[in-house]
Amino acid sequence: MRKKAGLTPKRPRPLAEVPPGYDPGSVVLTFAVPNELDGQRLDRFLSWRIPRLTRSRAHEIIAACCVHPDGVRRVPTERVWAGETVMLVREKFVEPDAPREFGVLYEDEAVIVVDKPAGLPVHPSASYHHNTLTMLLGKRFGRDGAQIAHRLDKETSGIVVCARPGPDEAIVKRQFELREVHKEYLAIVRGVMEASEGVIEIPMRRSVAGLHHMMEICDEGLPARTRYVVLDRKPSATLVHLFPLTGRQHQLRVHLSAIGHPIVGDKLYGPEREAVFLEIIERGGMQDDILARLGHPRHALHAHRVSFRHPRTNDVLEVTSPLPPDLAALWERS
Image 1 (tube, rainbow, N blue to C red):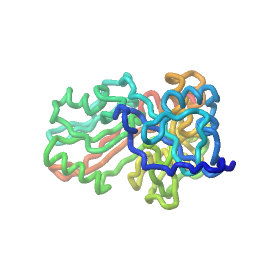
Image 2 (cartoon, one colour):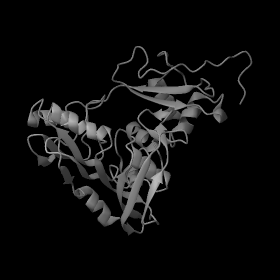
Image 3 (spheres, helix red, strand yellow):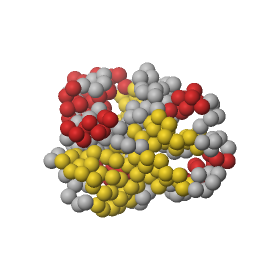
Image 4 (cartoon, rainbow, N blue to C red):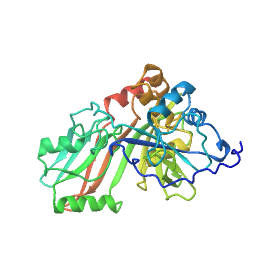
């Protein structure tokens, strides 16, 4: 589609996390306009970018939260141009409920290893503050009692390693930074994986469009390697043991999706990509039909085992967390 004569499209401007005049805690979504949609109406572009979004709903979303990088509101009839970025800005959410109980798998005077439940965020964010592992650890062990040494996604269950503040914390965190910590995961994935074991080597980078925290495969991305071993198979699913050999964000989820076996319940890297995540937001939460498509309320990924050197004795400390009840039940009915 050609641009109207005499009109020069605005050059894309660098995008701030939140445009001027908006609450810093707002959630920002961005969508790059591809060449083939150059000159398309904004409402039609948004309907294309978010599957199952009706034109009327696209109008509502644009009116409510679609803005230019300088904060000026957009209208549905505007044209979008190849190379620009469409931005949606949503107000920060009221803090949702989350599990507030966690298990302790190991504890001594230097180290605390906890078993995080699915649905509990590790760190505060725009959406969560009180309902986070960080805050709950403070309440249980005191503000300076346990410092988290690494990250784990909110929906991922399993092992989180913590250390006492000071030299113990520094030594443990350094092991994570140097990739000296051995980590293992369990996952239930869609479809039957034919090979009994293998290594996935696919480079990754942070996504240049869509949700800011997503990752994507890219030939020019950072190297990423994952070893896997199949533990069991069912007609429509596979239970797989995962060994991340590099530590990219969302690496296991991206790699499994890339080889055609996304993790069951994954709202970002499943068959519908991030569209199902946005649909949940648009419809006010998880609905029965969405759950039926996902196959499980959360992605079926569990941090199963970790081993590292104790900061004081230098002995290898290995801690294991079994498959949690919700994933065990999911596997039984797969």
